[in-house]
Image 1: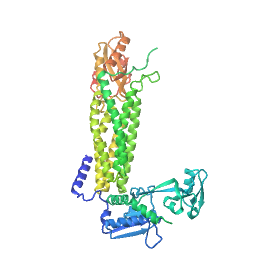
Image 2: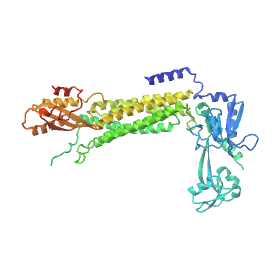
Image 3: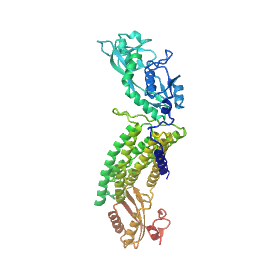
Image 4: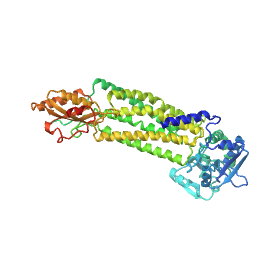
Length: 232
Length: 337
């Protein structure tokens, strides 16, 4: 009976393999990274990944650097590219992790292994102190984002498109929550939640679990980084 | 006016008791399965084996539901429009369920094989829970233990009752339950395999489980189709012709006015209906005798819902009268003497 054969085969493997690491990577990523190189794919997405300076920076770059240090990686290699290029390389196991403001709504769920969301951020309607969001309130939205559509769909306010949120200082606006303080606004309504994740190569479950535990332990650190990196 | 409707079907006390027990058992099964399905769903992740096990769990809801619905319908009085009663609704439901089983099984099988061919590696990370955040594989194994162990005992209890009341749906359910530990075991090996870094283990386990679902579906589809095509009734495990055919034949021959007889039956869900072709020894009182014989047979055989006695003359015995299926069983060959 084939099922018994399968069971026997698996049991033998189970018994003969030293269970020093569980779950174990299919391709041994975790072993390679420890004392070796962590290969990181980057797509620019402020404030998560910034390529403005010689060295990459941003919330997620900061987290990954700390993760590499924790694993004792000797170096961190950065590769920049479009998400599609990077995910392809990840799937071929030429990269270990891909970051760039990716959320759990990503289209790459089949090609990549998502970490559990390590941080939730919101796109919110910010109101100046003393003002309430009402029907017909004119809310400034940034051009080229989905904010205006969200305002129309989820509220009875009226979106006013603008090139730059700098004009929104002290006026009702749809903004990422970490910008509220700088613009002198307070949250009146959440328009959309983003669950932030990183991408790893599928099957590298030991590495995935290690990274997830690291990220889930450092929610507070992520918020701190967001506070410093999130300034315009 | 002549009554064309079959009588309301009633059970002898012993069978009624067994049915009552089975009914309770099936309600309990449904409640248990609901929790099991929820548990497995929470732990599902991106494992093929878990997906297959989940599909199987959902499908194992069908037999208990079919049984309970059938049980209600059994008590409905046949009407002028549905003179044989509503028993056959079960056969239709049975056919649909078997078809669904086959389709879903095929889907998971193809999906698993694709994953193998494309060498897709299953990612399983942590399960966010309290501050522990264990590897999700452990949660999956716990879910599999919960779905794999209790059905073994449920299946045994149902099998005993199924023998007592000759109920096919209950029998199918019992068999499915009894095999549940194998599904859960295969899935568990797949998960452990992933933990060991064997990417193919999960898809292989998924393929085996879905193969089993496909086999189940195919077997049930065949049985349900045969039911709807009025095949002669088989025993609850589909092994041989139901002995009731031979018993009816013997009972008829035991009546002094019957010179020869043959019986054909069809299954209407839980119960049987059919015709008995009888050659009377002489022409006297045929109508009254046939009437009495019909009532007596229905009284003596609880599974017999309705039977019509058709008196035939000796010379139409061969050829002119519709001939029943090839008698491979014991009884009918005696009448060919």
